[in-house]
Image (cartoon, rainbow, N blue to C red; front, side, top):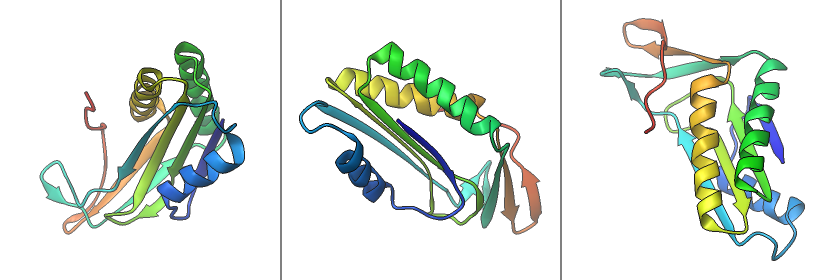
Length: 145
């Protein structure tokens, strides 16, 4: 399992391919589920020009580790990969990658969604958006269900 917080852009599909080739045993996992979250150019009815995503170093990684550990155990996953951006982002840039690997698709799908929803609702990240009219802090995440 790997959890990574990074400031630089990343290619989520290359990250998954690299992780599979370097961390997974060939033939062990029959299913992979991948979620990629990308910055939108709108929120709450306004055009968004940029966003700064902040986190609490150390605490964020610890919380992500705990929620991934719980999901891996609950769904009997073979492995998981989570990459999350922080810092300044522009619309169209990838923010988050969640990839889960298991013997069967149900576990991979369920765990991927569970990790993503828990990350959005509990992980200590804060978003400040830049609009044409100024800046604002995002008070709540969008509902995923």
